[in-house]
Length: 214
Image (cartoon, rainbow, N blue to C red; front, side):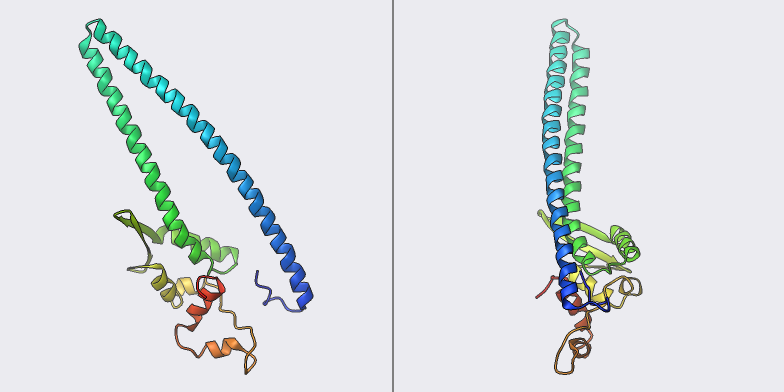
């Protein structure tokens, strides 16, 4: 939480506010972990039930097919077998697509979270940034290794290049946090000194403030 923009707060008041904020965050994280644990338990139970139902369905189909064959109804037994094979193939494809979707969200989500750390706390800016990232983020896989790209204009960039170019992009520069120009130094302002370090200074400053670099 950045309290530097709030005027009139002394150090004691800032510490008290930050302590309350940290307490709330810890409480929310604990509650979130508890809910995730319950959801995981429910999913496990549901998965076991679905497996039992599926095994029962397969056994029923097999028994019916054997009955048809015993009755000499080979065409009907063959048709039933083909239908069962098609069902199993469809299930396998569905499971594969689900796994791919989960992997894609995991890999894209990591990059999205890193970028969102640099976005302004303004709700409108955050909503706009998420909408932009939803359309811009993509991932490809080479022998299982993910490569995440972010589209900016006509270019597809990695995270580092995207964040650098976002500094001067009209849309993204309006949504990013302003670099912290508060601080002390020989002239009373580290921010003013950093502004003269070159065109990369604001970009590097944002990365440091968000904990993405040291």
